Image 1 (tube, helix red, strand yellow):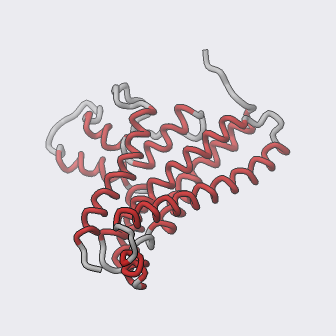
Image 2 (cartoon, rainbow, N blue to C red; image 1 turned 90 degrees about the horizontal axis):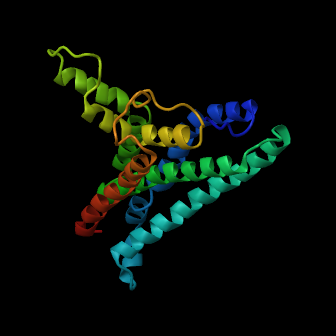
Image 3 (cartoon, rainbow, N blue to C red; image 1 turned 60 degrees about the horizontal axis):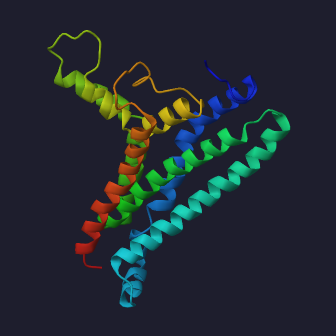
Amino acid sequence: MLVQLGDPEFEGYLDLLAPGVGLLVPLAGIILGYEAIIGERESGTAVLSLSMPHSRASLIVGKLVGRTTLLAAVIAVAALLASVILLYFFPSFSASRFVGFTAMSTVYGTTFLWIAAALSMALSTSRRVIAAAFGAYIGLTLFWTALVNLTETVLFRFRSTSGEPETWVTLVSFIGPNTSFNYVLGEVLDAGAIPAAVVDSSADFVTPAVALLALAGWAVLPVIGGFLSFRKDDL
C-alpha cells in the first residue's frame, strides 16, 4: 500500500524544487570550497599558520569543518525562510519531509565542497583550481550519465545487445553524485524524479544506503588524495 504524504500541491513543489537544488547547492559548495587551501597558499597565510603549532592536517580539518558549517548554515537559513512561506501556502506541509530534503541537500553540497577543497590542496594555482573545480561541477552534475553511456557505446559498438545496460554501467551511473542524490530524494522522500539510469533497475546495489555511501566516497576520497599531495608540497 502506497502512503502519500502531503497534498498534491506540496508534492508538486518538491518536484519542482529538486532539480534546482540539484544544480545550485553543489555550485555553492564549489564556490565555498575551491579557495580553501590555494587562497591560503597564494596569500602566504598558510606559511604563517604552519609556523605556529599547527599541522597541515589540522589546517585542512579546520578549513573543511568551517566551510562545511557555513554551507550548512546557509542552507538551513534558506530552508527556514522557505518553510515559513510553505506553511502559509500549504497547510498540510510535511515538516519531516522538508527537513529530510534539507539534510540531503546539505550532504550533497558538502560533497562538492570537499571535492573543490581537495582540488585546492592538490593544484598549485588558483586558475587551475577554478578550472578543475568548475569542470568537476559540470561533469558530475550535467554529463556524468551521458559520459558513462558514451563509454559503453564505444566499448561495445560492435556487439548486439538486448537493450539492457551492463551491470557496471548501471553501477557507475548510479554512484554519480547527481544520480545518487536524486535517487535518495525520489526513493526515500518522494521528491523529484528517480533518475532514468536506475529507475527500472533491479540490481541489488540500487539502494539508498549505497547512494549515501557513494556521496560519502566522492567527498572523502578526493580529500585524502588532495591531502597526500598537499603534504608533500613546499609552501
